[in-house]
Length: 265
Figure (tube, rainbow, N blue to C red):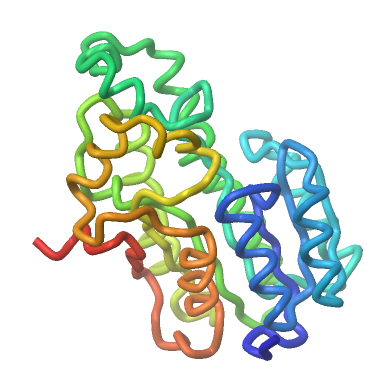
């Protein structure tokens, strides 16, 4: 157990699984009380946080709904009195949810832009860009009202900078998340509120579940990952912890890439 976030209140969207769940657990281990927002149940996350001895609140949250984003922060304040940290981890890879890396290896042009359904494209932007904006806005408004600063971390992706054929909705949305991070950081720079991003590479979460049993898909992922392995949610959570702790107090508008060396070239 650590003390990097001792006495802090952290709101985490997408906290029911994957990176969000690992971040909730790590933040609790570092002394934070946790508010988990997710569209689905988060029983396992609640168990992991409670095991650390910290308090935890679950709020059903659809980040594409403005009232849900505002309500999540309001519930956090009602329960804990304040919000110090926010991690916007809610996101999807495709309209169906899971990553299409397997699909892209099975059919090399099925998900190319020329064959793309507009509604499928829009759905990913709704979650990964508009939902991110409404989450960050709700967090920032509360932090501004408190007047004590804070830290917001957006979960982007290495795909914000690497074009992946057949994954235009995801790549475009994560590029949008990255630029939104920079704009918010600039707008809030003098307020004590820092806004940064984490851009993971291929990480062992439900989003790419089964990839290790699909050799072609796994080889495609590893072809741009020099370390030749998947990341773990705990490794991404560690990057989030750095950006929300006082260790990064002079950093805003930046994106860290726990991505297995994807940007060494």
